[in-house]
Amino acid sequence: MSVASTIGPIEWQVWQMPTASRIERPALDVLGESPLGAGDDALFLRGVAHGLRVGRDAECVTSSSDAPLWLGDVYSLVARQQPDEAIDILFDHIDELLSEGQFARCDSVLRAIDLDRLDTNLVVAVLSITLSAADELPHRARLLSRAEKRLSVLAPERVERLLHGLR
Image (cartoon, rainbow, N blue to C red; front, side, top):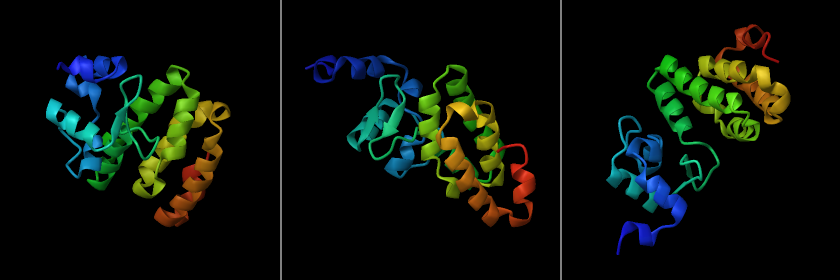
């Protein structure tokens, strides 16, 4: 039996894509592996077997959350004290969503972001990149409130200065 006959048409399109396009590295976090540098076919199949699902646009998301898996890369880089690389990933993905007018999808990312896993730089970065589309992102106001609380823990003496111009 061929692979094409055992999976649906969308999954088959994903299956035919280059591995790096099919599964983003943070999916490995779900599997208990290092999230950076992964992406072979066996890993993709293992991820699917562990409950990962692939969206219509070939973006992998976990079955337990609507958070895009690239957030796992961001969290991992923050944990490794590599905020510049984490900001690059965050900006690339959020900017792409906003540039394509995918405001609902961007808003779902804002809803899913775990601010407790971000440092000061990333909290300010997510507010900065979404400021221009604030009117299109209903969850940004709630994110701003959560960010203020998070920054009061991370940098209590600088909260007002950090949030200046981002409200």
